Amino acid sequence: MTPDEMLKRSDLVFVGVIERHHFDSWPFFRVPGSETSPSEGKYWKILRRKVRVEMVIRGVEPRDWIDVYEIFWTGGTTGDLNSTTDGQRALFLVRKEDGRYHVVRDWWRSIFSVANRPRPRLPLDDSRPLWERIALMNWWLPEAKESTLIRPPNFWHADPGSALSRWRTIKLARGLLRHPSSAVRVGACRQLLFAGWGQDECFDTLSGTEKNRLQDGGCVVCSAADVAADRHRMEQRGADWYWNRYPDLETRRLMTAVSNVRMRREFCRRWTAEYPDDRDSGCPPDQPPPATYVTEQGDLPLIGPWPRSAQ
Image (cartoon, rainbow, N blue to C red; front, side, top):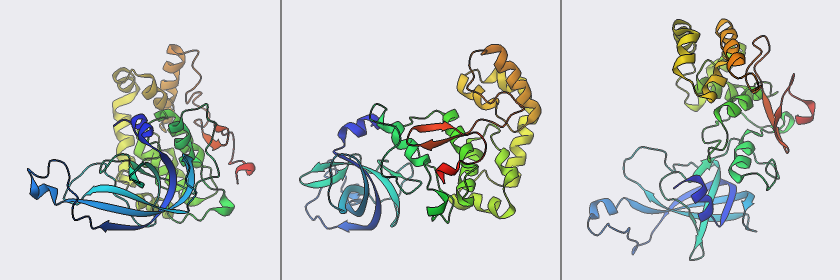
């Protein structure tokens, strides 16, 4: 099921906090096909999540708490599944069936973690795709004075509809490197390190304590050894190898913002020669790579430090 198909199936789209999980007893519940495989059928259960509603994005729901049901697999498995925890803030896409809210897709991902406390409204307006507005919501972090972030935010599933390009996401992460909150900066740097492609200059700006916190969200490419190995690999291969091997425009944009200064100069020379009218890149190489931040008007260029108006 595509993201747009999930939206079409949704009667209600909202951000909420999961307060409790409970497996309900439905003695006559049967999954289609389980008659021929009773051993597998026993692993399907009815899971009810009690969710506190924080922001309704599409549809109408006046209640503060609702139950969200899912046909949940309790056997062993792997993949991008609807595994959630108490206290988790998430985006829900649900449809009403027999008076109950049911996730639009059982088992496979249809509940998406939200990286921050929601604002009163989404960025942009109804003229823009809803998935784009939801993605920007996840990058619209709380002001420093009201932030209660203790752990770095996790931007996994921040763009559930794949509405933002890699380059656009990289610029948003770079913007958050200037956020007043240390936890936000650590989360943004972790996202850049996970992206790869030499977008790792943030590692050199973190304190020792902050570097240790990079792995709070399970990042496996965030140690000093990992960063050093990636930088050595890029240096050994050289600009010519990367430019010829990856001709797509999006990847070449990333090349113009690598932390390796010598290679960045070479990538920018090639970018300017081949795409003279395209200014959306990391060039010129003697300037900091471009960064953006989110407001109600969407993602805007961030020049200089984090703006006081956003604090």
